[in-house]
Length: 113
Length: 113
Image (cartoon, rainbow over all chains, first blue to last red; front, side, top):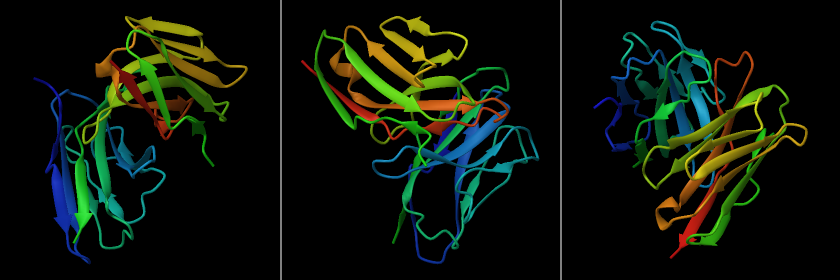
């Protein structure tokens, strides 16, 4: 079955550590996105990538980094510079065709120890 | 500033009745609107979308209405079922935005048996 896989489901990080969240898709989608959701809030865009080897900052990119070396993969690194990293992180992808919706993975919950 | 607003944090309806979820937007550049459904600890699932060239789109029990002059859209679910109980997010994207989505904060729908 095609889909978007985020791993792990739950992740714990110590203060001062970087941590990388995985996102893999086998839908042959061109574009990929990372969002963050906080309690009672909507989803906020962190980074997105329209094609391999290219990505752009979203609304809240500070303290995060990404790479897009393969079409299928778009890992997100939460660096120690991110002041409030505890959140639910969601990855999405879509075909680069007019009015195609984004489809989401099941998310990773990151907590600081 | 919040460009997409869902002013009702929660809504409760009886099984079999109509559920109406509302969404307002402020950015006149938005031309594509989507509704997503989300269960706790899962990723959002795409439900239905509408382009600004239309004022209505229907898919089974779900209908989205768009009033461009009022910058308002609504999602109607008829008949409502207990399995529809979830958080519903309204999202929008605009011309030239690479289909980046701006989300509302969501409305928790509870359908009572």
